[in-house]
Structures are given as C-alpha cells and as structure tokens.
Image (cartoon, rainbow, N blue to C red):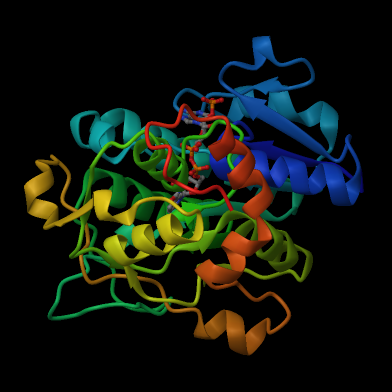
Length: 316
Ligand SMILES: NC(=O)c1ccc[n+]([C@@H]2O[C@H](COP(=O)([O-])OP(=O)(O)OC[C@H]3O[C@@H](n4cnc5c(N)ncnc54)[C@H](OP(=O)(O)O)[C@@H]3O)[C@@H](O)[C@H]2O)c1
C-alpha cells in the first residue's frame, strides 16, 4: 500500500471539498489531485478524460502506486453536453472507463460519480428513485453518465458508482447554486427558479465524507448519496434565501419549460437513500437546515464581500 489516492477533478466543486477533506483527515500528501490545467498548479497531475487511453494512463499513474482512484471529474454543463455529445461521452464515459480498467489491473477501488439525471422524473413514474429503479436518461448529459456507469462497471466490476444530485455547500470558486443565489439576491436581481423540478439537494461535505467512508468499507455497485428531503428547486432556493437573510420575494417560480433550455430535465425526480440508511447507518446525510448551519460561517463570509444593492438586508 502506498497510502495515496488519485483524485481526478480536484478543481471542481465536489473535488475541491474532497481534497480539503483528505488534507484535514489524512494529511497533505494523501491525495494526488489532477486537472486539465495542472501546469498552473504545482504538485497536480495533468489528466484529460477526453483523450486518456490505457497506455497514457499507465505511463502517468504507475509511478505513484495508488491505493484507490476517485473520479470526481466530468463534463457537468448539461446544456453544453447537449450540443457536444461526443465530448460528453469522452469525459463522462470513455475516460472514466479507462481509469477504472487501470484500477482493476491493480486490484484497487475505483469511484465514479453519477447523477439523478439517469432517471426521467416522469410524473407517471416519480422519484425518489432507489438504486435499482429502471433508468431512462432524457438528456445527453444523463445518457453519457449512464454510459459511464455501464462502461466503468464493465471495466472494473467492483467499482463504486455514487449517484448524487443538486450539490451545494462551501465552494471556493463560488460557483454552485447557493452562491448564484447569494450573488443575485444580495445585488437585488430577480431570479427565475423552476417550481416543477423536485429533487433531493445534497450537502457537499456530507457527500465527500460518505463517499470516502463507503470506499473504506469496501462498498461496490451503485449507491445513492443525497440529502434526505424531497424539495422543489423553488422551495430549496427560498429556504437558503431565508437562512441567509436574503429577500426571497426576488425569487420568481416558473415552470422549467419557461427557461428555454436545450436539454430536458427530469421533473419529479430525487434519489432514495434507504440503502445507505439501512446498510451504512453511520454515514448519514444532513437536511438543508442542518447543512446550512454547518457551513454558515463560510457562506456569510462570502455574502459579506458582495456589493450590496439593498441596505435593508440584515447579515445574520
Ligand atoms: N454538482 C452537482 O450538482 C452534481 C449532481 C449530480 C452529479 N454530479 C457529478 O459529480 C461529479 C462532480 O461534480 P462537480 O459539481 O464537482 O463538477 P464541477 O464543479 O463541474 O467540476 C468538474 C471537474 O471535472 C474536471 N473535468 C471536466 N472535464 C474534464 C476532462 N475532460 N478531463 C478531466 N477532468 C475534467 C474539471 O477540472 P479541470 O477543469 O481542472 O480539468 C472540473 O473541475 C461529476 O461527475 C458530476 O457529474 C454533480
């Protein structure tokens, strides 16, 4: 055992949280992070899932003798995937399968991150979906992730596939949904929020802790990791706005169809976590209220630095 893991996609929302978690719990050298732009990041490995093959993977990774590979990377822009299906397939399916095959050759764990978008959220067959519910992806993104699940599992039958959804929480890049909400509402801008998309929002710190916990317990196959509450996007947005003392009357509930998006979204979706609760009761996921309380200092610090358009808004 080398005592090190490969963290593919460490610059993303979930990857950055995972890197921080490893730094705090296992020490600075435990995780070797990757990025396509590793040249700007000393100590990071350059890795592009769209172009990696078995030979280049071996060349790049062999010197490290990793004990696990976490693939937290992916082409996550759902609209871009819709217009660039070939790139989506490379980054979300073919590349992860190459790394899964490499992990299998070393008999080490491999983790792939997938999504609720493998389901259709059809009101006739609504979520929250258990792990074994029939899949039916509506978008290129969802299909590429479903293809990734299949390809990864074929390359490494003992791989762990973590499905998650609507991830929020601390984000040093300030890019996830909670940050857009803070920027818009603090600056007095109205925000259109789908009222007909129902899901199970997921706290990124819990997602990371539970994923690492599952790997350490030797979990394999598909496991759903998400929050315990089924919420519409508008109810989620209102809850966050109210918690942060922002003006939730700036949130305009609209049907998803009014947003003019190219990629169809699952509406009545969400992921069920009965398997996690029954088999891994110590790896539980917190509610939105509990999660916001856990990271309120980070969120308030970000909010305090925003140019305020409305002097009436109190900072808690
Ligand atoms: N966030 C959510 O709500 C959500 C919901 C469901 C599932 N997921 C899944 O969870 C995982 C993490 O999501 P996230 O929110 O952290 O995504 P993110 O913030 O968009 O980050 C994705 C990371 O993937 C890397 N990446 C993109 N294309 C790549 C490529 N061709 N080769 C190598 N790396 C590439 C990027 O790193 P560089 O640019 O530095 O290379 C980026 O930092 C993804 O697999 C996503 O599909 C996320």
